[in-house]
Amino acid sequence: MNNLSPEMDVLWERIRHDDAGAVVILYEKHYTDLLTYGIQLSKDLDYSKDLINDIFLHLWEKRRQLKPVANTRAYLFACLRRKFYQQTGNKTQVQYLEDELLQSISAQSIPSQEEMLIAIQHTTEIRQRVQQALSKLTGRQQQLIRMRYYDQLNYEQMEAATGIAVKTIYNTIYNAMKVLSAELKGVPVITLLLFYFEKR
Amino acid sequence: MEYQDPEDFIRDDSFLLYCSGKAPEATARWEQWLADNPGRRQDVMQARELVLYIQAELTDVAAASATFRQRLSPVSDLPAPVFPLWKKMLGVAAGLLLLAGSFGIWRYISTPDWLEVSTPLGAVKKVALPDGTQMWLNGGTTVKYIRKFRQSRQVVLEEGEVFFNVVHRADVPFEVRLPGGLQVQDIGTAFSVKSRQQISDELLLVQEGKVLLKKNEQHIQTLEKNEGISIEKGTMKTTAVKASPVSTSGWLTGTVALDNRSFSELGIALENTFQKRVIINGEQLKNRSITITFSRQDNLQQLLETLKLVYQITYEISGEQVIIK
Image (cartoon, rainbow over all chains, first blue to last red; front, side, top):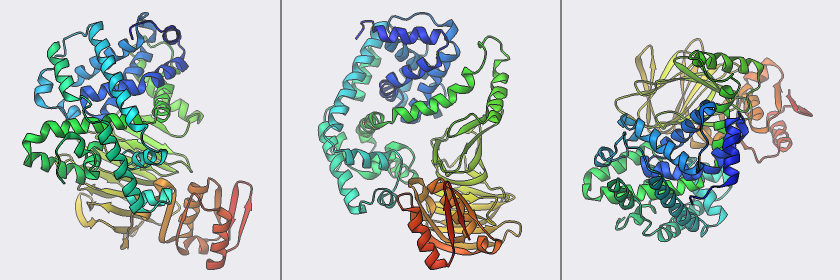
């Protein structure tokens, strides 16, 4: 986890030397990890996406001032965390956070390397569980879930797009979510996060 | 349905929609449920978080990256960001780039107060507004929206066709202005608006919830689910029309349903769907009305053959161009 990845360091150096392609590769490489971490912090998917875009744009703007880093992933996690805490003053941005959780956030605290490594580990565990659960679904099931809850299509639109009857779509999604809910039973979510906050 | 464990929630269609944060009715329903079951808040939040992790895993990284690259490009074309002047230059650089026409599938133009998004013909683009409202731009569309989206939520349709799935907020109304001067105000809803230079009317179709139609801040009419209205440009004469999910938002997934619309509009819809230049010859034909449903999967030539039989038109396909007479 905390070992240096040579490839990553090359990317970092390329960014420092004005290579815009490198920042895009870095973005793609860490996107889903950061998104998963962003959800842990904000409980909001779209907001997390905005935060990620912001930190990478900022990174690019400040590329000339960047210092070499030992662990790029930990650095990016720390950026996301800092950005999130900077913005939590604006409560409308984080409408899904509970008050007590908000109050436990202290904008001043600077995360230690160790804390970031714990966050990375937790994120990796969550992703592994979710990937494992999703691997139990067929490609068709995944596609329909995406259309329904991601692209926000209604059943008629999905029927028009896929040629599958509404009733079949409904049953396919229902069965898929049944599989997922069984597979994901007991994935630690908020409890672990609370522990994480208390620790600080 | 009984909700025992957090996992039970994620089998519920409306709960999953609620987690997306963009389905007003589901959000209202679950907020009410939470108010009625305060002890279950933690379970709901846990289930919500699980759903978001699934969505994160299903997120299309390539698409996110494409959007990111768009935002990166005006920045990367600047000299080293040293001067405070930089922010002003960003706008200028974006403008110059735009003139050069070197943007990809869609683009942003930044002014101090408004952001502009547009699509070329043949592209459908989904844009998330700062409040979580989603808007889909059909091909050949330009819209502007106010940068400070929190105090007021205003969108201006300049040209084209847009479908909105609005996140309802009672304190900040969501409003879309049409080129003809009408204002469409949402009350928690999904709807589409259309206004094109080649078409003689503006069209509003409602798929979910309710919208208010206003002119000069005066309320004219309320429209509900599956209702629509056509507004003649110039005279502002209104005609009630039927709306269906397919006619309102079928084009998001490549299906077009025109109900008693003009051949001019058919031409634009064909251009958008089949990515060919379509010319309708003759004023009379342009204004002739047509009712038709077709989709991206259809064969263009077979479709035109059907039109030939039903509407007695003739057509020519030459390379990237289609002429209908």
